[in-house]
Length: 331
Image (cartoon, rainbow, N blue to C red; front, side, top):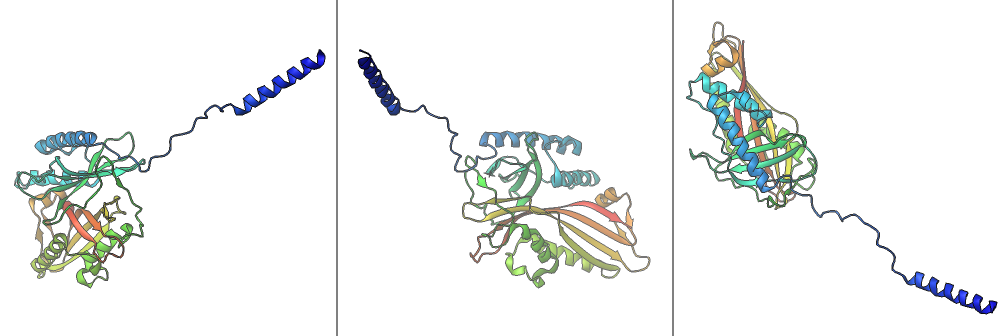
């Protein structure tokens, strides 16, 4: 009897063990697989809301010619440029009003990123005065900050916007030292500044396609030198203000590079008793009406470049630019 019970217990244990071995183990939680690409920084709806608020802020500031009304939607170079334009409009009794800045988007270039600062580009619709569309550069410094207008530039005639990813998907943000491009984005601003200074004599001149901004700089510099040749001389410097603000990849494997250059144009008066009469705007900036030793004008230049793929044989092309006189000193 005891043996039967022992045998029965043993069989029960074997069956239980077999059943346990064949049972399906409970599922273990696992994280969701990472997305193939990063999400866009802003949705289309969010971009529309940002532009709408920016338009209202600009309208209020422009109507009053009061830069204090622009915060917090205008910052950086754009704030310095708009402030100067308000001073210019006031000094000229409205004859030279602020640059028209539409806020209706023709193209939105939204980055794929999960870090800050975040930079978005907007190519606007053509202004009512039929000038060229603008490229608005919008920046969000931290997650708690609003997107602000950091700068703007005018598209050149005949230049098309580089083809980029749909805003719902977003465009990749590239490394400033990207080796898959014809020129490292980190080198573009300094290289272009060298071409502005030296023209065709620059060793880097062949790397850049011709553009209206460079032609205008050269023509203005030559005209100024001609105008003051009997009383003095002209010298100009072109200095990148830091590296690129952003480098955004295009659908064709190229890159859009945005940054600023500071242009300082100095007239040195060498003829005894000679003097230069300042314009009303320059007088408003300096507090004096004449220069007897030197006159220095500082321009803030916002530049947007298209950088081709390495090995393509194409040149780096400046596709949009804006230069605003933001400071003047007279001695």
